[in-house]
Length: 349
Ligand SMILES: Nc1nc2c(c(=O)[nH]1)N[C@H]1C(S)=C(S)[C@@H](COP(=O)(O)O)O[C@H]1N2
Ligand SMILES: [Mo]
Image 1: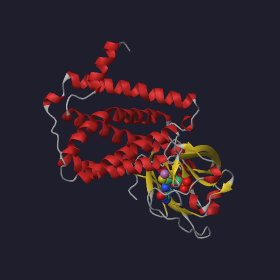
Image 2: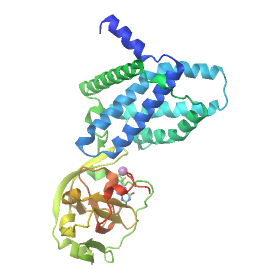
Image 3: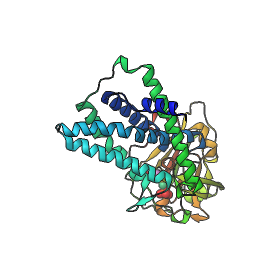
């Protein structure tokens, strides 16, 4: 960059006032949350851009830190009330940033048995309440005059410099072949399938299921029927290679064997809007009908029957979708009249 351009870029990157710094940082944090949610929702390559965007936004937060540092410095000297809460907020924010970068670059992948990505997400979620409190107790009201050409230019420069730095860091990670070079587009690291962790979305305990009495309820256009394990197996199996990618930052690619859901459910009626798959624990997900041809009710994993923790006797395999869609311990599949998008984007239990 020519000296002149660099000076202009620098002037645009440094917010003009503490108001502008706080508003800018708040906007960027909002984007960080939105793209972060997008990143944990996406499971197929089409959503890779949102994960990259999250990384660029992370770099933009770092670029705004020096200016925020000056605002904080001023605030601390004024000894305002509730500074403990503000300091806790700063620690959570910096911690979340640090673990995000550690996970993405592979510098640190695990702490105390948890993935760095999981710690990044946990700290970011913990931050929501104190951040809301901070914004409410120290309000900065946006003004019409904030939306100037300079603000837009500043945002553009921030995005461009952030994007450039992101690409640079990613390039270095690949060049030196740091661990981060091996992460999946979602940010997850591949594990040996034999050591797949037993994972709950929130709190589902592993149920004890007696295969002799377990029945699968199947509701299609012709009504409901109950299948035993033997009857299910008699429908014939297929094997697919698919990647189970958990939002906590690990993934496994394995061969899953079981009965295709389309074969199980048969004809789809005009009244049907989705496929519902439910666990004996009550955990359930609705899938768009366009998924039907790819869904598999698996009973085996890399040639061995499913272990109790991994969904025995049957678990869903949903290629291209994140782990929380792969319902374990399935006891009910049905063609449903309820549109899949009426469910919360993430399970609530
Ligand atoms: N019934 C039920 N199924 C579930 C979950 C759950 O909590 N309950 N967790 C999901 C999540 S978040 C993931 S990542 C995968 C993990 O599968 P695993 O335990 O075989 O690794 O199961 C999914 N299926
Ligand atoms: Mo997960």
